[in-house]
Amino acid sequence: MSLYATQDEKKQAAAKAALKHLPKGGILGVGTGSTVNFLIDLLPELQLEAAVASSNATAERLKKLGIEVVDMNSVGGLDAYVDGADEIDRHMHMIKGGGAALTREKIVASIAKKFVCIVDDSKWVDQLGRDFPLPIEVIPMARSAVARKIVALGGDPAYREGVVTDNGNVILDVFNLNILNAIDVEKTINNIPGVVTNGIFALNAASIAIVATDHGIEERTAQ
Image (cartoon, rainbow, N blue to C red; front, side, top):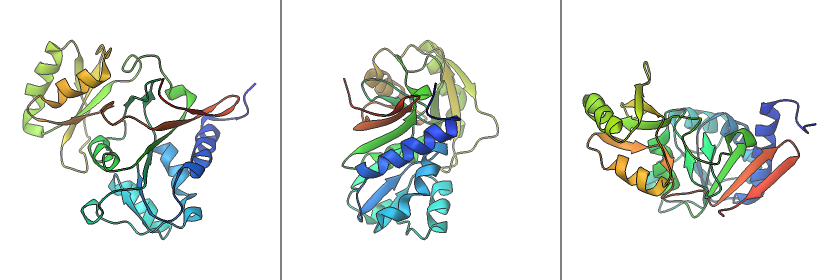
């Protein structure tokens, strides 16, 4: 029997449990997605100096709560970055990009002292990429060229129709890619001309995962 009636209740619980891992005051990097949206509603409690947003949607949500959103170029670093994941494993490696904000998420996370990942346990996996396709942000003119390279790597790329990122690019979702060594796969795909970045977050893994399970909140770190 679960402590939570719905998946949204799990997401809310993970968001609430993450607060103690985030700085009071200071500057926070804030990700994108449904779980993060629950957290954003709680952020006024932290009395932040400011926030750096990973997407236009997140920026608008923060501003509506009266939280100042600053350009990343105006800050030297972040006290923490908080975000969800489409998948996360025991190494704290993640797949992100279901909401098409992967590039800005990866950039903002890269300057944070720690990365707090908030998820419900449906996102916890033994191996990345088996159940969720790997998103890749691609410069539009290179879409077909990149897709051919991905096929050569053993993946099945699909164009995410009707989606344009905040950076003006397109998304390829890659199915059936065998991601045994996430760091190597992340590097290999990022080296394909025309790729902006891919949704593997292994070079910049999470510091801690706040996981909402049927039995309550679990705090997990890399194994």
